[in-house]
Structure formats: C-alpha cells, structure tokens
Image (cartoon, rainbow, N blue to C red; front, side, top):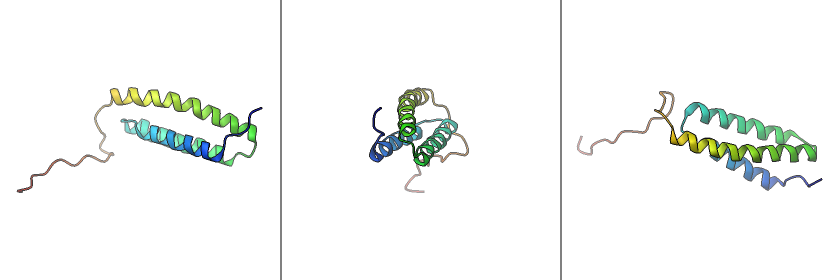
Length: 96
C-alpha cells in the first residue's frame, strides 16, 4: 500500500484542475467543471482514511488528464459568448 499524497500534492492538483476548468470557452461547461472540482476536493478534504484519500487522489489525477483534453477540444470549437457572461468591452475612440 502506498502512502497518501501530501497536502501540497493535493493542493497542487486542486489548482491545476481548477485552472483547467476555467479554461473552457463554453460557459456551461466551465461552470459545471469548476463546481465539480470544488465538490470533489471538498470530499477529499473531509476524508480521514488514508486509503480512501489515495483513491480519491488517483481518480482526480485521471480526471485531470481527461479534463485537459476536453478543454482543448472545447477551445477549438467554442461558440459565441452568452448574455450572462462578461462581455469584452468594445474599443472606444479617444476623440469621442
């Protein structure tokens, strides 16, 4: 049996997963994966059994690789921004 991952490793995985989740161009996918990431790592945080922590961590590592591939595909085929998203400000003329 291997030792459970360190706190630093879990936090690093959390930040990588959150960063990848935020890279989705689609609003719905982006919000879903951000919410799912937070829920997954809250479950890891509340766990006290080292074997289950290792299991959750391994699963999260596998999900991160899938999430990265999905984010790339989503960026390639991203559509229009929705009305609920922050719109990029249009360029304004300096003389007006």
